[in-house]
Image (tube, rainbow, N blue to C red; front, side):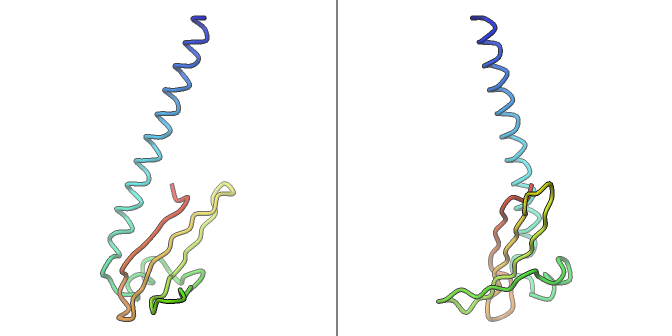
Length: 97
């Protein structure tokens, strides 16, 4: 019974450690990407390069620049929303840690 409790405790501690590291990396990613808010489209391209994809949403005049990178078979995707004034007004990040 003690062995089971020790193993269960170790698993819970490990899960919490992984969760904390993911939260930490996510915060770093958001801080890094937030520097592009209110910046020009040209500034974004200068820092990030040419987007891998440009999307347009149906009811929006905004464009979405999509940057993709693969690491360990996991695809990191960053999207930046560009308004008609060519300014970055939003971003999202998926699997980028």
